[in-house]
Length: 146
Image 1 (cartoon, rainbow, N blue to C red):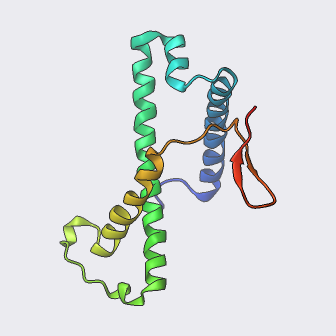
Image 2 (spheres, one colour):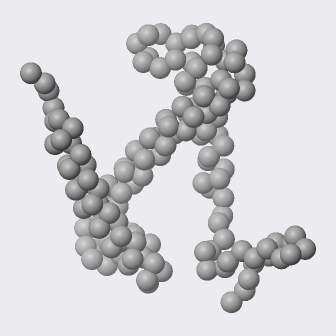
């Protein structure tokens, strides 16, 4: 006797779940791209000032969880990269207790390495996408102005 879904049941469930989410994300992205307004403004125009708070909080929670997932994945990649560069890192001693469910080898690259390098990039100002980047034959780089 098995617990949970089988692969035959799981694959269609995941496919249709992603299909439904992609339709919603595409529609909200289309509204924002068409009118150049962010998601909270769209939600406030539909649900009002206080009705939009649950939708905005849910979206913020999803963004936090997605950042955590990316941090864990990138930490694993960073760990493999450090192990390839410095093989002695494979034998890095663990100073955390077993109840922590994480080792020092995973905690340091994930939190210190990836998080410290990604935060400045996420907080930096980005140029608008409407200004395409042009590279001239002599190597100078500038932005085209409409």
